[in-house]
Every structure is written in structure tokens, then in C-alpha cells.
Image 1: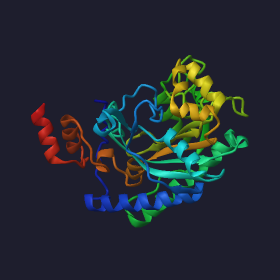
Image 2: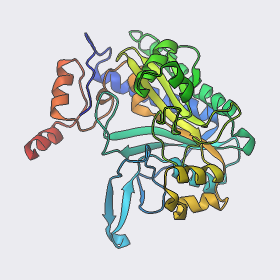
Image 3: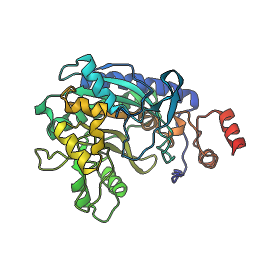
Image 4: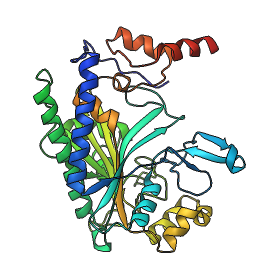
Length: 358
């Protein structure tokens, strides 16, 4: 179990009924704003995909998917999705979406290897979105413009939330700051990646850290990224590698940085082959998704995921994601949260049965 942050003197500003109403308000408003800003239309997404097609995402490159056999398919294995980065790109091709337009969906996933804490749960819910771009859009300038549009939707959602619940006060800055992971390392060479994120977010309030996934000057990555969705190796017009990044904010409730979104311009043929080679994953070239991309059957795209529970947590000033979503938590964490004023949403019967099994 990861370290639990217990804010001193924490007290939820909204009761459980108000919280549930707030969640509905935030989700409906934000997804409408997101779809308007990026010209996205909603599509229905799968909860699981067949194993061996290369469609599921392994995120940082090491997570194990939850899998199960399908009786009517001769015990073929299916995997619960980690995210829908590759599936969305296939969907863009299937729907013949034009450049400048895209899709979004409600993505639900199970991440069994997640280390549970205030921000991380076994259950993941996010808005997954993907849009078709042109070759000339594969630039840092274009990426940053999309980030600003998403951040504008976040700011409008904060304003709406504060209007509905006067006890909640806005704290997000008007502008988001951009910095490359290498520049961040140069600023804080003696800090860990997480400590660097805390420092830069406390300074600016909202930050987009670019170039996540590639090796930095210290021989380490800022954070891991799978080699076959985000393009973290192409040298952009600013002379720095990476066309992706994370939207982070400084979250005063927990006194730490807080990731709201991971996103980026996706790999083209050249960067896919390059990144697979860097990571020693050339065997993936034979998989269905990768063959589609290498055969020019998939459009160039940009996309990402925005945590639904995380956004609601921030907007409603909650200290634990379990105050927003129902999930399974270690009994020790549940007790500590209750003592610290964090009332987790869960199923008492599931908890008691889990305790009995242990």
C-alpha cells in the first residue's frame, strides 16, 4: 500500500448527497465543453478486448491486464482495457473521421497493479478522446494549443462548481505553464521526478510537462510510456524530443502535484518503429494494430485521457478519490481515512466478505 496523505484538519465541504449531485453536474458539463472545444462526438467503447491484437495499452510498459477466457470463442482470452489509446485510433479509421474532428468516450478500466493511495484506485474512469490531425499538426505549437483548450474547459467547470456550491472556492490559475521534462530536470537536478513535479506545480499552479517517456540527460526517464501510442521520441521544432505530456496542477487540499490528464500526438510509422526498437519491443510489429499503422491504414492523431473521478475530486475539494468513486480499499486504509475525515464510498458487504476471506 502506498503512503496515505492525511490532510491536517480536513473536513469534506459537501455531504454525500451533495457530492453525488456535484459529480453528475461536473461530468455532464465538462464532457460537453470538451467535445465542443475539440470537436468530438461521443462513441461507445469496449470494456474488454481480445488478447494478442496489440489493441490494449500497457501504459508505463509493465502493467498486467485483467484477463479471462470466453467460452463461446473456444476459451480465447479477453483483457479488460487499461486505456483506449489504440482502440480509439482504429475507431477514427472505421468512422472515417476528417482532420480537425474526433471522438470521445467514457472509459472504464481495472488496473490491478495500481498502488492504492489518495489518487490511485483499482477502478479507473476517464474521458478518452482522440482526434484526426494532419502531418503539419505534428508540432509542439499544435499540442500546446490543444492543452490550452482542455485547460479552458477545466476552468469553466471550476467556475460552474463554485457557483453551485459557494463553500467551494476557486484556486486554479488562469493560465497553464509549459515546460519540457529535460528543462525541469535542469531546474531541479537533485530531485526525483515526483519532487520536480511538486516544485514546478507549486510555483505555477498548473503545468504541462512535455516529453515524457524518453531518456533524459541523467540516463533516466521522467516517467515511463509505452512505445506504441504517444510519440515521445520525435524531435520537435523547439529542438527537444517528445510530442506528448501530462497536465498537472498544484492541489492545495493534499499539498502536492496532481495529474489530471496524460495526452499527446500519437506515433506515426517512423516514431513507432524507432520507439519499439528503443524499448526492445520489435516483436509487436507483427500485431494487428501495429500492422494497420505500418500499412498506412490509420490516420495521424492526437489524443489522451482525462480522469473523471480525479476531476470531480479536485472540483469538489476532496482528499481521497474513494470519496468520489466506489472501489475496494485495504481495511487499514479505510480505517485511517475514516479517522482523518475521509468517508470512502464502498459496498459494506464486499468489505466484510473480503475480510472474512483474508
